[in-house]
Length: 335
Ligand code: ADP
Image (cartoon, rainbow, N blue to C red; front, side):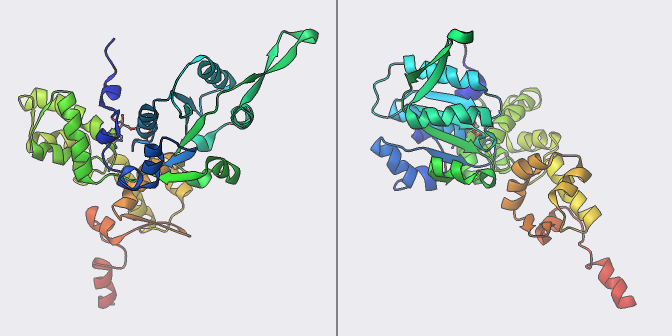
């Protein structure tokens, strides 16, 4: 069966993993651990789509050890037991322990936590055999796992969880040049004809996020097939991206609604996250995890103890005048 598109684009080796040099470049701590073939449990922290899962899989490939995944949100006790069972029966010959990747670790539910952690610490779980009065529990051995947790919100990790995982590695959003490398690689895998300027345009307008860049590439490719003779030129990329409602700097409708609401209703802030969520109709968690990181990277938004505030560059980008400037000033002088 053909591999799903997203899997075809996912890098399998560190050489293909672009950027994040502070983590995997020469001399970086994580790189040293990987090269030594011995890693301890750690957490990868960063916004959605920046390469946490990909990096964890690459590490498992490199160490030639099995890779298992659990979602802290959707996996239940049965899934944990299934993973443990699979790991028990899977023969592998690497020196390194199998990796257990737990996505959205900050949301790990208590029930899962209660069977997972003792298993990790004692290398054993208790299984019930039989039913009713004759039921008894037996201990079975569990292989030693290396836990890799992924989270979009390090602030929500409890102290015991942080202690258990040891190191927290933060992934950064990507620079346009790095995203261009990723888009170029994806275009070549998908056999898309793309000019450099077209690639750069997609990279610049993908909010510093590889998953968005790859998605944008496919949308622009579809547009190019209809309008541009199949080739992604600068003009084709510009038109296709504008049709998605994405502006010059990669801001989409929701980004612009967040900024616009802050400016029009709250004079640019400070405004609390919940108020912002209620007035824009977006979920507070989504605003915080998905929209804010990029707005902050652009220097459009600041977090202050009293709430979120728009910066002067944000006002400029949104083509609005902050209160107390422009016409208001003129009014004051006339008075
Ligand atoms: P996360 O787990 O942080 O949500 P993923 O690891 O699933 O993000 O990454 C989403 C997609 O983006 C991957 O399928 C891959 O194609 C691409 N990607 C992510 N990081 C990189 C990278 N450093 N280099 C190349 N492609 C990447």
